[in-house]
Image (cartoon, rainbow, N blue to C red; front, side):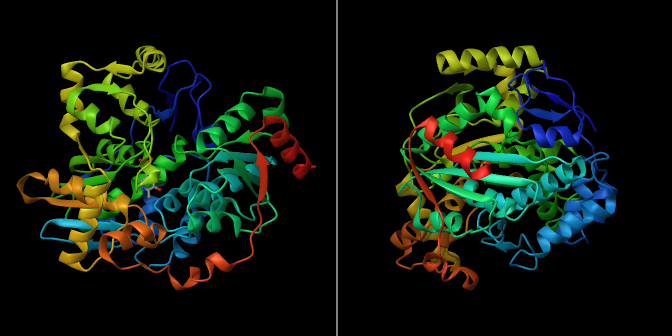
Length: 463
Ligand SMILES: *Cc1c(COP(=O)(O)O)cnc(C)c1O
């Protein structure tokens, strides 16, 4: 299995290098040169498998010779065997044809665990084999940081530094990060905004001497291995609901377009997906694109679903690459212009091509709270604000011919308790294993928003 960059200038790589590289050297994102496919008979065989077995069968199509079967199987068994629900990604029926797939039974209660846990183990395995170590540096507004820390904790080949804006992440998210006391985990609270944190991380990566000296790496959502591990649950849900004999649609609350792009990948691999509905909050650049064919940047406004508060969806580049006929030069040109002008449009044919698969919908905070209340009234289920956007988007775009529609529930309601309580009057409780989370001992260093002090701190920590 070979991977190519969406900007056409970086070298073709195998899985191991794609895993460790993240961003391609030409600034593009890696995608499979050709998609592996599963036949209807293959899909029928998946129907009887456990989640870990499904993950093994799907991911082995992408990993080439990076792992032998026993190692890859071991990784999947270890990761998904530790999730809290024995089904790993249980499906709940909300209505006649409407289902919710709960993707919040991992260690940090959000869907990012499903891929990040795999990524952490794959990093550790490949690095140990090569006798190398990496320093992972990242910025987070909440969910990504906690999932990355849980995935990398106690891994001998990894040190992880995670920057968050001091006092600006939710108490649960902050505690999920800073209560991890492992020696290789380093939380840094920056006196500034999330954008400041992200800018300082970019500064570190843009310093070649620093970058090479500490072998800096990232585990953000553009890493191909995360997309790969997210493809698994589309297969898992669809075969449970009748694929390959019946098509299934999905509704995905979306920020960086990584999760829903994994659904697009499953479709390329032969899974009969009739629609992928993209749910946006007030930061609706994607919903506007699928309505008009114009991608137009706007300022970010804070919402009840902060993990979808984005200005630009970085993984959209992978879809754009296909829309422009997989021509890396054209793709790079469109994105360079976009950075300059804040806008690009696709042709009517390209928009039609995109809309064969995707639809978009937008819900502001009031609409989100109304959906949380409705779902609770109608089913007794408490859902978080991100998942509520997914439910709203599904209801606005029902699957054709009464096919099943699956909403991806991306966070546990207790991760966003204020919004849920506001909408329903009920405060969702954390799972028992996390009940004392806020009272646990914490370790975190505070730093001003200053590159030199940040560098100095990393240097002295690693010395
Ligand atoms: C990260 C996140 C999202 C957005 O996922 P993308 O892959 O960026 O589209 C949605 N909901 C929750 C709870 C998240 O943590």
